[in-house]
Structure formats: structure tokens, C-alpha cells
Length: 150
Image 1 (tube, one colour):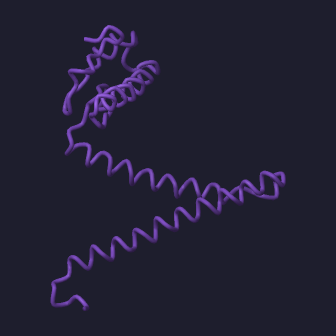
Image 2: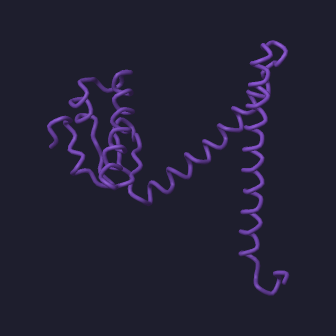
Image 3: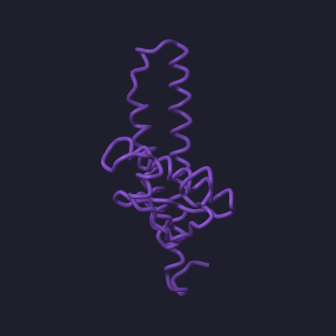
């Protein structure tokens, strides 16, 4: 084990689980407390950074009260879901931004709102446009060769 942290980062591999007892000991906190939840977040970030520094890109997930260094198969599913959730979050955030009453803002804030709304809208439109292209390519690959246009 390393001398500066009770978790042996060198021994961690994809598929490993860090159990609640280890987290409680490492961070001197009890399960079910806000301090424990904060410790989970800190340790998750620390593991990802430590292993990245060792040349190993990993995804760490909170599973019940444990942390798990996901296998590549698990990370594929987890990261895809997280990415889709992030896209939905972007759309909701943009909708909230569009709902801001510009007349209640100073002129500088109005310009900032206009820039934010415009930039967010353009990024979302680019994502939608690219998604449509990808869907069309996917459909084209699924068609039998005789039905594809030349």
C-alpha cells in the first residue's frame, strides 16, 4: 500500500470493488451519512485520476455503498447511459435558459443571455443534425444491397 493513502491504487484493476468497510476506514466516516457520500465521490475521482496517471483509463461507479472499477463491458453500458443522460440534461438546461425573462435583466445580462441562448441552440441543433445523419447511415447499412440506390 501507498504511504499517503490507505487504498493501494497500484493493486486496483478493472472489475475490483472497494467495499464500504474500506471506505469507512480510509475516510473515517460511517455509511449512510453525508460525509460517507462525499467520501465516495472523492475516492471515485481519486481512483480515476490515480489510474489515469498510471496509463489506465477506467470508469468507477458507485454500486450501493461500494465503489466498483468497471470492466470494459460494464463501462460501455454505463458511459453510454451517462452520455445520453447528459444530452437530455443539456436540452433541459437550454429550455430553462430560453425561459429567462430578458426584460428583467440589465443590458449586459441581456447580451449574455442572447449569446448563451444562441450558442446553446447552435450546439443542440448540430447534435440533432448529426444524429439524423447517423440514423440515416444506420438505416442504409441495414437495407439489403438490392434496395440501396446507386
